Length: 423
Image 1 (spheres, one colour):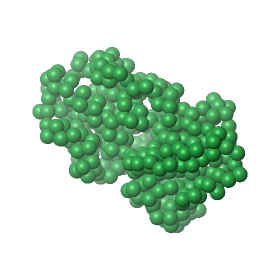
Image 2 (tube, rainbow, N blue to C red):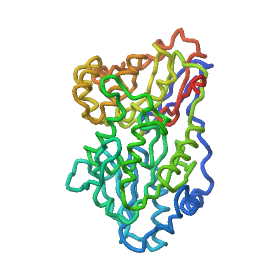
Image 3 (cartoon, rainbow, N blue to C red):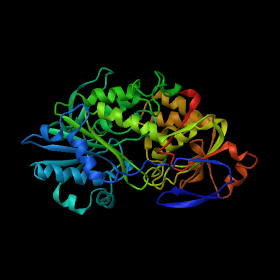
Image 4 (cartoon, one colour):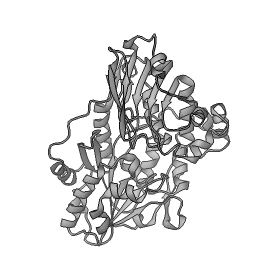
């Protein structure tokens, strides 16, 4: 039987035996009237006064929006928001938009146009946050965990901050969105590294902290530190939490306080985007979900991590993740400069920005065999402990495995396998 799998901006057909389990494609129905649901989110928020009540009569309104690696679907919500603010007296002369980049790469002009559209580009000031530009940062204080928080000075100086964040699983922060728009979104490099370091054991070479895992926020030290850092901002913060399907349709939106509204959105997501399984499988075949989820190996790792949770120890994972932009991180690549076996030693010696991604990769490739279909050179892939997935490899790798022991996950970046006996 043929199964189309997303790969970059296209698909390829996988031929697999009848009788395999298929998951990761059952999205909630898109909202029939997204703009009216958007208005409800503004006027009936969780843990906050309605937006029109906290909108200041003067001063800058800063809108924070995720970069392209989180998808471009938020552009429609942004257009609703800009129109709403304009009608309430906060037009282009007062509103500025900030791409909450964290440490991600800058966008090309074409990518910016795809994200915002020409009308928004022509009417509004749009900034890409630069975590390494120290002159653009200001110290707002230190969290209880010891993270010294340097944030974008222009955002800090705002009279109101509005964030549009896409809620999804995150492999060490639990869930994306909300507080992540601030930390790491508009934070300085030093702040981001300090926060992300909390994801690893005291000796980083021992791996990730148990509670730094997808779907967990209440006991997650990284999440807690992100919230504590974001709370240091003096200006009011109003968050819009959005969830989209694979076609860009809005399936959920709420708004309000960065913790209360996000907690509800995360619970809603967990209920609908979990793949409930009774046991791990001997083999899992998965797609990261296409662009932008497989734009590079750093981003694709998240889908690999999630899909690996459905694979039994010693089992097999076949992952389609194009990675047209290559590895995506010098620090991630650098951790594998001496090969997979030396990663714990290098990470223990010096923590860098993506050391947790390196340790996650090291751990999962030690537990299972991962074959990666990508645009990255075979030798480069091998450094990370992956095997290249070449044409027809799936045929003989899956030979002899009962179809009932094979799971296909069509959108592994969006769906999380959860084994029922662990609940």
